[in-house]
Structures are given as C-alpha cells and as structure tokens.
Length: 292
Image 1: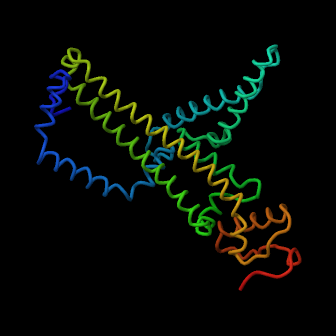
Image 2: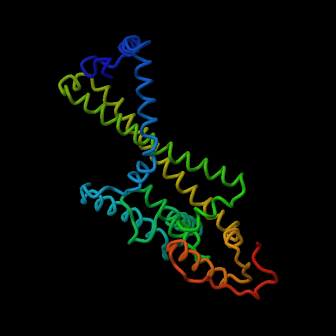
Image 3: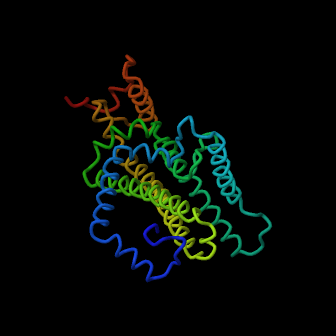
C-alpha cells in the first residue's frame, strides 16, 4: 500500500503492477528476510500469544474490555440456552421436529463452546478451550488439565500425531489471526493519514476490510480447531485413561466408582508433589499386582 502511494493514488491494476515492480528483487528479499527473522524470533512467544487470544490478559490491560468481552460471551451463551426449550404451542409436526433439532444443536454448542457462567472468558477461543478443560474427564473423576500431560506420552503414536496436528493447526490459525489483524490496523493507519485522498479513492477501504475478514476467518478457524481438539481429548481419555493407572503401578480397577477414587487421588498427588498421602486401591480387586 505504501509503495502504491495509497490513498493518494487510486487502486488500479497499473498502480499495483508499478508497486510490485518497485519492490521486486532486493526489496522483496529484504521484506522476506525481515518477515522470517520476526517469525523465528516470536516463535517462543507462541504459547503466550495463544493465551492472549484466549482472554488471559495482563493486569495492565483495561479491565472494562475484559468485562465487556465476558458480557458478550454470556449473551451468546444465553441465546443458546433459550433454544434448549422447544415451544409448547407448536401444532405442526414438522415445526416440532425443527425445534427439537435446534435444541439439540444448541445443547451441543453449549457443551463444546462454553464453560459454566462463572468460568466464562472474554473470547470465544478461550471459552472453547476452557469448556473442554472443565468437562472432559468429569465422568471419571479426573481433571483433564492434570492427567493429560501424563496420558499424552502413553498414547499410541498415531493418536499423538493426530493431536499434534490439531495443536499445530490451532497455533497457525492464531498466528494468522494476529498477523492479519496487525496488517489491518497498519493499513488503516496508512489510509487515515490522508482522509481527503481516501474520500477520492475509497477502493482502498475494501483492501483493509478484506484483511480484517481474513483475520476473522483465521480466528474462527482457531475456535473450530479448539473444539476439534476438545473432542479428540475426550475420546483419548475415554479409550486410554487406564494407561495412567498402569503406568503408576497401581492395581486395575473393577468398577467405575473405584476408578473415580483412584483418579481423584492421582490428581491430588500430581497437583501436590510434596504430598505424603497414600493412594487407595483394593489389592483384592483383581488377581495379581502392579508390574515391576
């Protein structure tokens, strides 16, 4: 945009071609090298960038923005709650079926996209990730954020590879959302530097709007990746959770209630490594004992 002389010069194909030729060769090499250097330098901050997109903002960040974000997310959650109850005055069978389907869809979205009201974060990405953190594993009495780092290393290679791919997709989408947003803000500053010229050549506004649309799509992709990651996390815990008990050299459990007791105590142990609390299990639950 700067090379094209925006917004003083109109957005035409000849202007774009001229700008491309002006930065071709050495200019393109410099831009590419700078982009790679910045990307590599910021790679260690990827986890922090995801946290920012989730809504874990620093203390100096304006509190009212976080409160507004939570309010917006709560409104979205309440709209889904309103869809859970089908109207009782529906006379048409087709209308009842449609209402029931909408209620089922709303229930699924509530489970996948929102934690409880008191646990809401100011962003859709943060709530999708927190929803899976809070709900996955509850039926087994375990905390997924505590058990998952141990279970992940016990999973079959193909399962771990699939989970890694989803995490990578989430990271890439978050990075693209941040990059497109930064590009859109920068483009807006360039255009607003000369408002009178922008009024004469308003097509540049479409360019900036397109950049912000790409940012939105990238962010939505991150949210969908978080939901898919939560589903796979739930499946992995359903199928392979017993491997944690085996790896801790505990006796296999014969009932769901006994399993819940073991996982509750394992979570307590993992959260407090200095604890001297002994794990409870029934040595007579199954013949044999823990492997050496």
